[in-house]
Amino acid sequence: MSWRWRGVPFDLLLAAAGVSLDLLMSGQARTGELPPQYTVVPLALLVGAPMGFVRRWPLPTALWLSAALVFTDQIEAFSSNTAQMLLLVAVGVTAYSAGWRAVAAAMTASGIATAINLADPGVAFTANAWMYSAGLALFPGIVGGYLRGSVGELERRDVTPDVLLAAGGVAQTVLSTWTSWHSGAQPAWVTGLLVVMAGLSLGVARRLPGLVFLFQAILLVAADGYLPEVVNTCLVLTLIALGVFAMRVASWIWTSIAYLATCLLAAIAVVGPDTEVTAFRAAVLCALVITPIAIGRYLGVKQAAAAAERLRIRESTRLTVAQVRADQLAERERIARDVHDIVAHHVGAMVLRASAARYTAPDGPVADALTDIRETGHQVLEDLRGLIDLLRDPERQPGLLADPADVVRESAERMAAAGLVVDLTLDPDTAHASLIARTSAARIVQEGLTNVLKHAGPGTKVRVCVYSDGDGLAVEIRNGRPPTTIERLPSSGRGLAGMRERVRALGGTLTAGPDEDGGWLLAANLPAVRGTA
Image (cartoon, rainbow, N blue to C red):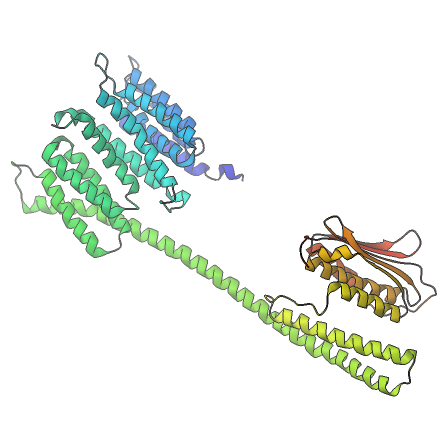
């Protein structure tokens, strides 16, 4: 499945939620003389279905909803309320996920559409209304930008609830208090600004639950004294803030304090001068206030359990990796012991016998051969110890007993002493190649010359070339026809395969096969990073 479609179920859910919201709010909408059944569903699809595209194409969605808001306002459909609410969501998502040009376009379209929605026929559009229209488009953009910034510290998938809380809070406060803004002593734009801020503050309630709860409490007390018409709306926002507080704050002490404070605030909001206070009504009020705490606590426990499960999975994965690593190290240790016990024993015995024979043999070719066997055996034991150390501790950096160029020359000299006619060409520029490439080239020369000795025998002419080839190293080992028919030495058949694996690990290529003169050609190309040796 393409990554573009991994969120399709969530997008379908957003679209269904938008359509359902409009059906709930505008179920009795009428347009002209048409009966409701011909207008409700089409208008619900017009303003609600675009929410399915808001995550992928937020700016086009915001522009569409702006046009839908103007259209539904002109035909006096109740769906304009839904379009206004969802437009705020689209602006917030645009500010969160798009660039500043897209945000400016979304906020401009939203401000114009909101102004048209608020304008009444025959009534002059005041400066306060213009300020409200601009503010209503601006604040979702501010919230989206805040959620996008580094101060948020929440993952991308966790931001959607914040945007929905902010947009839903603004929609709730605006739609339920708009008609009362001019009834207070303060200017209408002040009331409108506070109402919008009260709704938007829910967008940061998950991050700053204590401050948002305190802010809502202050607004509730202020509304009770200066604008009683909006007290119920402020009480709803306070209960929502209380639920988020209970979800985010684990301390039962602070939750209890917030509960008692909310009970007092609710009593201030619902108890009037003529209200008869009874024990039953007080119990109902306390039970009403405890509901958001119960919901918030439940959601908080679910989130904590999910976080604990994710932590357990990460820890289990880490322990599993560590156990696999320990098992690998144990297996390497076992292999190292077996290699040491088997190979080192036989090679050591061979070296001791060659040394003893050297002291009893007269000077001559036989003595020289025994000396070479002894020195080669010592070299094998040294290499074997390094290999065993590497098997026991894979993290250590393997060291070289000699410079790779010296290893190449030594190999050529040893094979020449064994009877091959070796012509070595070693380019000085190879010293600037990476150490791992030069080391691999030296090992290939060693293995290649050994194969020539095994399969072609003494007296065979061999030309070895190691030179720089562009940004890498090239190794060529070309031997002629065997001078005589020889008895082939024992071979495991793993030498060529090992060279191929070594070259492949470096990203190079290796070819081996007969040449046009009846001999054999081994060629390898090794990538090399230029630098110091």
